[in-house]
Image (tube, rainbow, N blue to C red; front, side):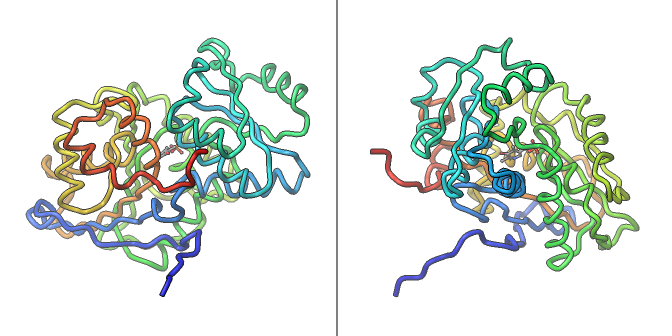
Length: 335
Ligand SMILES: *Cc1c(COP(=O)(O)O)cnc(C)c1O
C-alpha cells in the first residue's frame, strides 16, 4: 500500500526529546517540529510566507519580489511556494552571478525564480524607501516582501504556533533561534494565552545566530508593537552570546557537539539556526540556568536545505555532514 503524507502537516507535531543531560538536570524537554510542516518549505518560512502569498493573490499581483543571500532559506522557500501558487518570483540576491549554480539557487531557478544579483552596497539599501519605490516602479506587478519575509503578514502566521501549542503541551520556557527577529516577534504578538507549567509566567528565549545582535531587541519590540492586537505579556530575552562566532560560523568543537546531539536525539539540527539553539540549551543546562522540574519547549524552525550549500562547498566537518546528509530535503531532479 502506498501511503501519502499530505502537506502541510499542521499542527506540526510536538515530541519529547531525550538526552541523559536532561534527566541529570531534572528538566523535561519537548520539541515542536516545524521542520516537518513541509519537505521543501520547512519551518518558520512556511508560516511567514503563507499570508504574504495570499496577499499577493488578493492584490492580483503577477508575482513576488524579495531579497536574500545566495544560500537563503527564505529564497529557496519563496521560489517553491510561488511556483506552487502560480505566482512568478524575483530574487534580489546579494553576491555574484556564479552563485546561481549553488544548491539553493539551482532549485530556486528550477522553480522559476528570476535573479537580480547585486553588490553589498546595493543590497544594503533593501530597507530604504527610495530603493523600494524604484523597485515597485520597475516591477509594478510584483508584491515586495522583505528579506526573511519578516513583515506583519508573517508575524500573524508565526503567531499560530502559540495557538497550536496551547492545545499540545504545557511548558515554562519556549526556545527558538533568531535571525531577523520576525519569528520571535510573531510568537510574542500572539493573543493566545498559555499557562506556564511550573513557573508563574512563561518565558521566551531567543538565541541570536548572528554576532552583535543586541540591536535586534529594539527591532523585535517595534515589530511586536506594530501588531494591532498584540498582547505581549510574555517575558522574553534575547541571548546574544551563543552565535558561535557569527552567522553560519561554528568551530570544529561546536560541530562535534552538534553531531553528538543529532546522533543522540535523532533530530536533524542544522548548524546555522536550530543547531545554535541546541548548543545554547546545553550551555544553559550546564550553567544551572533552568530549575529542576522546568519544562522547555524547543521550536525547530526548519531550514534543512541550508545543509546543501555547506555539503557542496565541503565546509561541514565530516562527522556532522554524515549525521545530517540524509536529511537534505527531497525535491524534483534538476533536468
Ligand atoms: C530564517 C530562519 C530563522 C530566523 O527567523 P527570523 O524570523 O528571521 O528570526 C530561524 N531558523 C530558520 C531555519 C530560518 O530559516
